[in-house]
Amino acid sequence: MCKLMSKKLKYYQQILQKVSFDVQLFSKELKKAYTYLTPRDRDILRNWVDDFIINRADLQLAIYHL
Image (cartoon, rainbow, N blue to C red; front, side, top):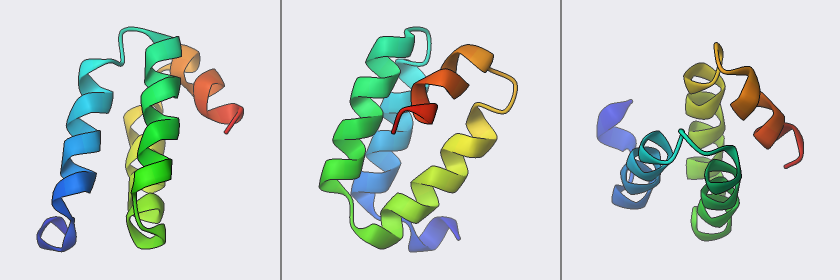
């Protein structure tokens, strides 16, 4: 699946990892990613985010509002 990921998707995954210390910033960048990604990439990102935040209750609240 990694070969099928676009450069934008990889970029936003890196950004989300870097800003995951701040819930508001994470939420803001996630919304921005959804704006610029294709529907296919959004689905991939959503799955990645679900896995990334599985043990992070603070970030789970951030995506609850999307």
